[in-house]
Image 1: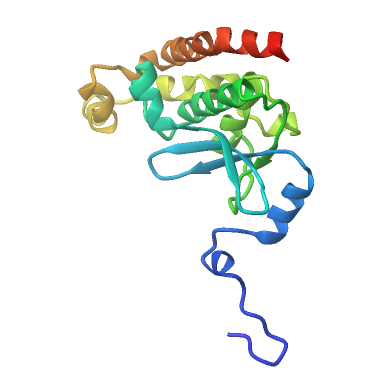
Image 2 (image 1 turned 120 degrees about the vertical axis):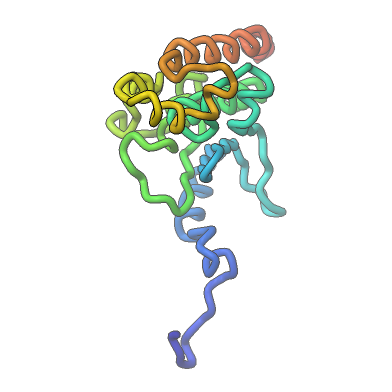
Length: 204
C-alpha cells in the first residue's frame, strides 16, 4: 500500500471499483443526461440519469426482468437481444419524459465492440434518443435479433440442446424462434409508447 505524507485514500466507491470519478466528471460536464447501462450475470439495467448537486436523479429506467412481466418475453434476461429491448424500453420512457439526447455511461466496464452495453445503446437509438457514438461499436442486426443463438441451437445434439436451453424449453419456447420473437416484443413496446410520443410531440 502506498505511504507517505502526500498519500490520499481514494474515495470509497473508487476503492470498491464502482465509480471512476474522473470519467464521471467528464460525463457530467457534457450537461446532458447519462444513459447508464449496467449488466450483471442474469439481467441488464438501463437508466437515464440526471446529475444534481444533491445527487443523481433517475428520469427513466428499464430492467430486463420487465420484458417477461410486461411484454411476454420468453428469452433470457442477459443476452444481446434482451439488452437491445431493455435499451429500447428505457429510451422510449425517456422520450415520453421529454429527454431527446444523452451520453453513454458504461461505468468501469471496458468498451468492447458489439457488447451488451452497446446493444442497449442501439435500443436507445432506435427509440429516438440522440446519443453520440461510433457506428462500428454497435452489434450487427443479426446479433440484435439473436440469430446467432438461433443458428447455434440448430447445430446442437439433442441432449446438449435440452441441457443448454432447459429454461427456454420449460417455458414452452424454442430458441430457434428468437429472431421473430425479438421483433414481436419490440413492436409491442413501440406500439405501447406510440400514442404517448405523439402527445409529447404535439405539446412540445
